[in-house]
Each structure stands twice: as C-alpha cells, then as structure tokens.
Image (cartoon, rainbow, N blue to C red; front, side):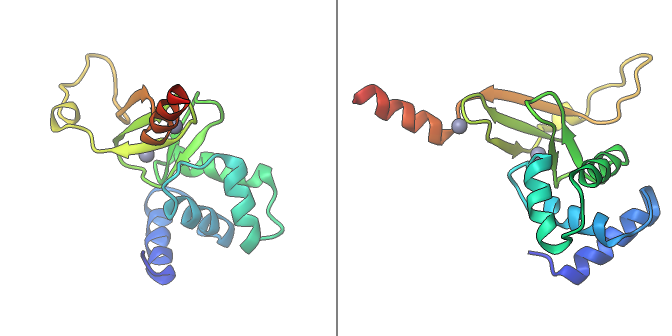
Length: 147
Ligand SMILES: [Zn+2]
Ligand SMILES: [Zn+2]
C-alpha cells in the first residue's frame, strides 16, 4: 500500500499534467478509488469519502469522478447497472459476474494492445469485457444444485 504522502504527490502530478486543480475533495475521491479493487459505484465512493470529507455531496462526488475519468486519471465502466469507477486508469480487461455483479481485472493480451489503427477512428482506450460466473457464485450454484 502506498503511503498517503506519496499518493498525494502522485495525484498532484496527475492534476498538473492532465487534469485540474488539486483539491482535498478530489484527492479524497482519488485515493479511495485508487486503493479499492472492487470497482465501486458512486454511492459506495460517496459513503466512504464522507468519512473524511463530511460536507461533500453525492453530486460533487459524481461530478469529480466523471471529471477524473474524462481526463483518464481513473477509469469508468459505463452501462453496467450504475457507472462503476476504476482505480486503474490504464487499459485492461474485466471479468464481470452476471450473477452478483463482481468485477475483476485482468491484463490484456499483448496482441490486443497492439491492434493496428482502424481507419478514421481514434482509439482512446481499450477495454475487453468477459461476462460469466465468478468462482464464488459458481460454488454457490453447485451447492444449491446438490441440496
Ligand atoms: Zn458472482
Ligand atoms: Zn478494472
């Protein structure tokens, strides 16, 4: 786990180079999303960030998340049920459990990262989604079938 100081340093640099002004609100949101691997939605993020920044509204959290995602500082997974946000802003793939909604990261195969350019299309990010059943749900279903 990165220390708060080095994470703050990293975020300050990201702010200056690709995004917006450094604020404690933005940093609180970034540091929660960055340190959380569950691909949280806006409500989860708001619930947690409120513990350190009690005055923050859900609207501000949503606005800041979209702002950070638009600048590529964090990732955003749209059209799942609610938008989910991703501490990993670089290109990678997602395994999505169609039963419980859990989302897991996996590294994209090198061949996918080296796709030739598509004519007339500017690729901004690459994501591969694989739908299925997570290990836990598969186990639960097996047990249910036995009973
Ligand atoms: Zn599942
Ligand atoms: Zn991810």
